[in-house]
Structure formats: structure tokens, C-alpha cells
Length: 301
Image 1 (cartoon, rainbow, N blue to C red):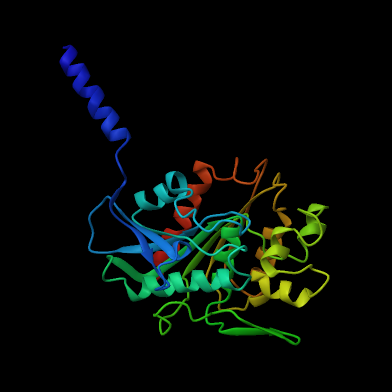
Image 2 (tube, one colour):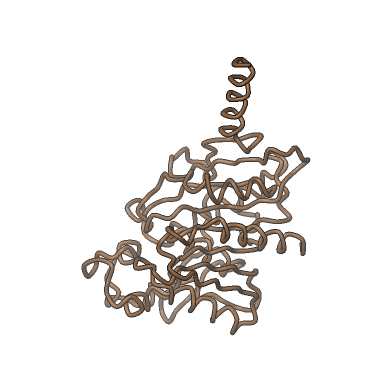
């Protein structure tokens, strides 16, 4: 009897610690330069299939980190795998590595890499969704609103948005659906929403990302905003934001949602009562809503 109980205990421990993916490719360089900040991982679901629709998930770090690609795999990533999605987790350059738009160049290179290598990694690239949290949400939203945008001009300032990183520049960087978790979306309005600056003048995360104070060149900060690029051709959006978030104020997501709706884009905004920056916002219930959103978007492809 003791042996039986011991055996059952071992099986329970093994099953509770079992990986919920069937295959993983680590440290794939999407920019053809062998830099660690240009590596990504690909996870395939445990259920065997010929190929899998894809979700790219971008970590949050106030754009300060360049090697956190495994973040949130135990929560958001795991739920996506269980739902049958291949999950791609990329690194990207930080604001210390390069100024904006280098970060969106990285994410667009990731999308092009996935499209070009779908057969190799069993990816169904007819559906590529994207998600991210905090600064990762900003980059996910920006990837969503800049599909097909090569460069963009605000008054006299023109910025290259697509970039030419990697060797798959002939492929599209368009995404089919966006789930933005509490990402900043209008960096000129963020301080007035919050009631204070998140750092000394010139030292806020967004100013370090652009490399100057907001008062020095507002046009560059306009080009940083996902809201700037919205038109009627954007993919559907799902947006989560906690109303107790003191890092990125929830007005940022409300502004994005309102701008998408005004342009005729399908968008759902879920304002989470008591939700903070991650805590009480990355809940099981909300993660399920994210999965349902991607399922619905994928079914329409």
C-alpha cells in the first residue's frame, strides 16, 4: 500500500511539474547579428498538430531591459499554449542600447522572421497575434497600429518605423490581433493623467527612450505614440488596464480605445476595478478573456 501511495505521489509531482509544451527552440537570432538582445524563443503546444497559430508576447520593463523574454510564460504564455497557440517570446533592445525607433524595428523584425520561417517551426502564419504588458503593451499596440507604415512624418520630423533589421525585409510585419496589457499609448498625456511625472525631468522612461526632454521636441514623442498611427485598417484590439495602476495611468488605455473606436476599429477595453500594474490585472479570468479574444480573431481568418 505504501509503495502504491508513493507511486501515486511521484506521478502527481511529475504531472504538476510537466511542461505544457511539446517543443521549444531557444536563442534564435531574428536579426542575423548574434546579439543577445535579438534572440527569441518559440514554444509549441503539447497537443500534436501539423502547425499552430502564433502569438508573440513582449515583456514589460519601461524599455529598460534587453533580456527578459521568458517573462509571464507561467501565466499568459501557459494559457496560450494550452489554447493551442505557438508562443514566441522575443528580446528587444533597451533604451540604453539604442533610442527609439530601434525597439519597434526589433519587434517588426520578429514578425517578419516568424512569417519567413513558419514551415521550419510548424507555425501557421496565417494568424499572428501580438500581446505585451506595460512597455511591452506599448510595443504590441504600436506594431498593431503601424502595419504597412514604412515611415511617418509629423510636421518636419520623419521617422523610419519599419526598419530594415534582419534578412527577411520582403515579408510583412502586419499582425492580425492585438492584446495590450496596461501599455502607455500617449506619452505626451501620461503625466497629466497620472498627476505627476514618473521620474525627474529628462529622466522619465519615455524621455530616456527618445533621448531628450518632452519640452525639447514634442514631435518625436508624438511619433512614439501608438495612437498617432491609427486608421480604419487596424486589426482588432483587446485592452486591459487596472484603475489602481499608479505606474501607467488607466487613461492611457481609455485614450487608445476611444481613438480606435473613432476610426472604426473593433476594440474592447476592460478597466479592471482595483487592478494595479500587473497585480490583480493579470488574473486568470482576464487571461481567459485574452484567449477567447484571440480565438475569435483567429476563427475569422
